[in-house]
Length: 192
Image (cartoon, rainbow, N blue to C red):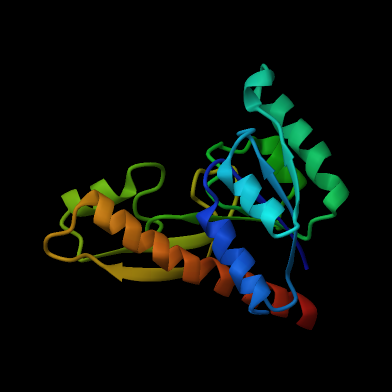
């Protein structure tokens, strides 16, 4: 299974995937490319350091979301991805992109979906008095954070938690969840 990762920032989830790949813990999956909409995203350097091909293209150079997404498809297609992994890609994908990669596009979200779609999930969980938070990997559809859930990981909320402390613990949990999901998907693909 050929994996392409899309990111916009530091690439900590990508780093966890690279480490899992180096430990042969991604099943039949292999990271073959990393794309960013931020030309100097640190995640691109993480990929280069692991000898993974990279591409970058700023969305600011395009007048519409659809035009940018078509350009991303052109950049990503040569890698022949079986699965597109969104890992901190801070763009809402257009219907053009979602349709093109239908059934091959996953995202990790820092909440226990269907709770807290969108942004500021940790603050919302704390303000609601929740006893747990977590992360969800889901299939991407046109509905924001609305696709079918693949897997989740739970993180207890501690009595004196702040947004930053909770965010850090959820991020560490994401680093466990994403490799686990990709391994499971790669092994199920082999079986089918």
